[in-house]
Length: 160
Image 1 (cartoon, rainbow, N blue to C red):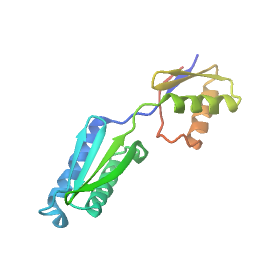
Image 2: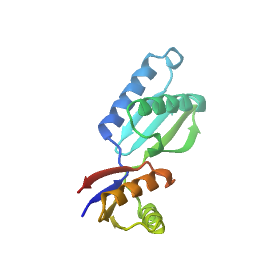
Image 3: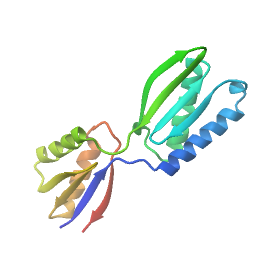
Image 4: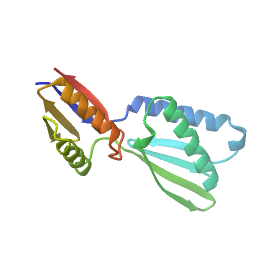
């Protein structure tokens, strides 16, 4: 029976490249000369540094631009609160990867409400959709693309 997986993942190599490009641009831009503007990548977390809120926002804008150019969905970034103190500012940005249980339930509910002849099952941080016809699975993909689940979704492992 045909099936596919609904996942939410980020290509870490592309993310690392985008962060490196952002840091390179920060190093070469005239308005950042002699400032504490920087960006760090730790596991699934980005930390943006600057002398003021304005600089942190500038770094965020550069990062979003570089990430979009690299083909990563910007929706996978979840900016945290801006922390200011001691003449410095920083913001922690979480990188969302994997589908949480609540979101997975929401996806399964959407699929079941559509009354298509498919089965959806939660398997860890992904949702496996199985059906008898390939056309039904393609309808599910179209349905999920239109629905707003709050995460960028990818569809992989499509098998006949």
